[in-house]
Image (tube, rainbow, N blue to C red; front, side, top):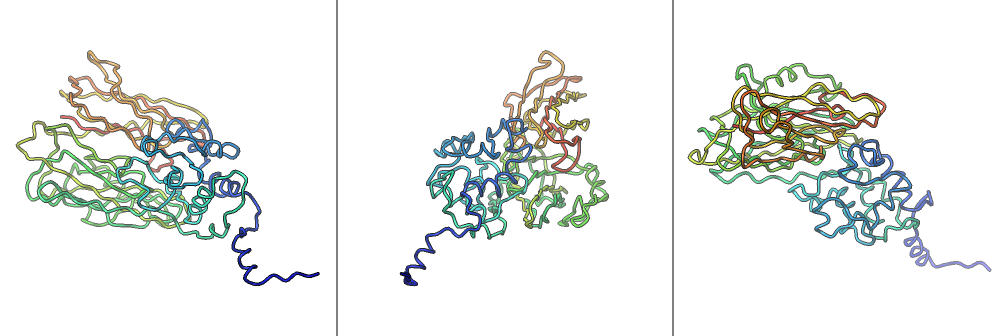
Length: 440
């Protein structure tokens, strides 16, 4: 006998059934469409041999990712303090994985304690991919169940975290400089410069720099100029590479040779304060260059934007005028499938008191050490950083005193897991080796 079901019952049954053509478990879809192509890549989360493994301790390759994620504690201190698991079955809000991939602003503390949005390097997920993972977690994060509607994945719009505006310093305490929103074309690294004139009408002394940038940023740097003739025009966005052809802009490249480092670095959401009584001088209407570098490895068009607050202190409280360190080692050559350490010593001709150190290298960097060169403290390690994405900024309340002829030595180790050699260069796929800091 043929049984005819009421239309209302058919609609009810269809609403409870997963709409899918694959029939695969939800986690298999996550692995194949999200984790394997965007996370478990060489240098990121593919194996314990990745250069970044010590920073996150997480492998997301097929066959390992589920056990690495579900009910496991994150290494991130802020996430542990919030009682998050990497994946907390049944609760995406308590799952650090969800906080790291979502573009909902409230899930990304502006103080940067959760680190950058993942996947790193502009490889943001689509809104559909993020929503699929959220539903999978809330449904219990099963390894084998197949209950999430595959149609969720059809939303292919970019899940990029919108930058939250940074409030400017209160009147009389400093000023703000901004790079307005600009496009980062799909599958392109865009590095731009914008020349500004500082708004101060009298000489001021800056002892704090607060920065904020979009999550797919590689660096933000504030530069001054050595020679004040022939400067680029004010408020004009200048590209290091043509956004269409990718060819280097020789005019911009020449302008970079006139730069003097004033502040900034890899972590574009940092807040740096010099020791008490130490500040660097900004003359009235000083010309400066704001430099932002974003990398976009998606098929989406992304947006870059940067804020910089410079906080001042009264001239009467300044005991020492700070100068900046910008010490580069360009001699980098890392062969395929190899680990290499490069050492270079920089000596000073005059008495130098170092009050802050930080470092800059790229994703192949495993360790960046700075040692004292010469004198009674020769060989002493004064700085160590293993996190290329959020490099340590170390202040010295008691300055490192270097006599003429003494200096600093950089000892930097890289691991290259790829089949191509890597050397010094200006893109995120190249490497760098720079000591930044302040001294008087």
